[in-house]
Length: 127
Image (tube, rainbow, N blue to C red; front, side, top):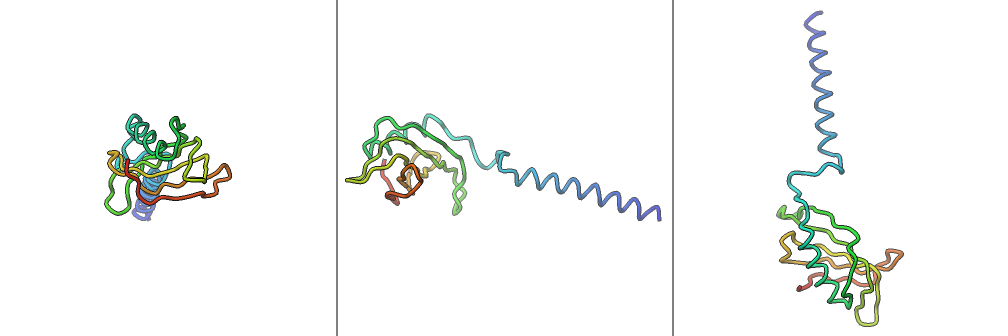
């Protein structure tokens, strides 16, 4: 009987530790060691270049989220800009894109309006 109580107590402690560990791993507010902090000056420079491609010389950075690519786990940044963007006769108030954290590649450009409706997209962009 005494041994079963110790085993039960050990299982309870193990369960608590395991659930705390899982909670820490799954909490989206907890930064991951694999996801570095975005280089704000590089994000600013790349944002200026991407926005200029669409006629905006002074974009506002709305958000930057660090992540890693699914295919090869490279650090990437997901960027959202606000401004007055143009692509021919089309115009948009927001522009989002994904960039390598090194700034060497930009892709998945999406222009949208204030209601988050997609106005145009571009697969790869040379900056």
